[in-house]
Amino acid sequence: DSGVTQTPKHLITATGQRVTLRCSPRSGDLSVYWYQQSLDQGLQFLIQYYNGEERAKGNILERFSAQQFPDLHSELNLSSLELGDSALYFCASSVVGIHEQYFGPGTRLTVT
Amino acid sequence: GNSVTQMEGPVTLSEEAFLTINCTYTATGYPSLFWYVQYPGEGLQLLLKATKADDKGSNKGFEATYRKETTSFHLEKGSVQVSDSAVYFCALINTASKLTFGTGTRLQVTL
Image (cartoon, rainbow over the protein chains, first blue to last red):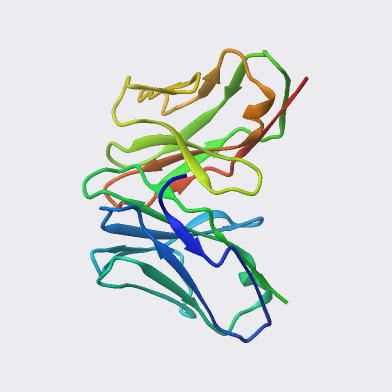
């Protein structure tokens, strides 16, 4: 158990809908990262937050957004969903100044 | 930009066989290198890391040495077990803080 929690574990929704994925980092970790894992694209970095502020952006679509709250949990919002958005979404967290990231169990999103 | 190249899988071995999974990287600066493992239906677990040239990361019988001259970080284990069956990801991180992953190598160990 990494100490990173993600909810829900599974999500099935229809095209055009909007969903919110939630992540709670390990106790004491200020940085949160979101990754997408799909069969065709592999593991791709989406976005990083540090202590409530956006720190780095990767291959994140404009339809996707994220935020980190004062209690350090983070949410990833996916809107106008398309079939191609079906994937595993992972959250990871890390301590300031330390590079290793600890991953949550992921949320499997299926868009039908 | 940064990139990680791993050997194609799947790799199928008998129990107690020697394992090598090749990983090479391209990066600016001096990245830290990692191996993560993903068991079926689970998230990624950090297996080992190395933060500078010639460092050897080790954990649970797995080892990898950071070779700057060959830009490699090959994963090895002397005697694999059925329970090692999983997908292994090589990854790097530099000052940009985002992990860049290889495509993953599936290992299947049989009795």
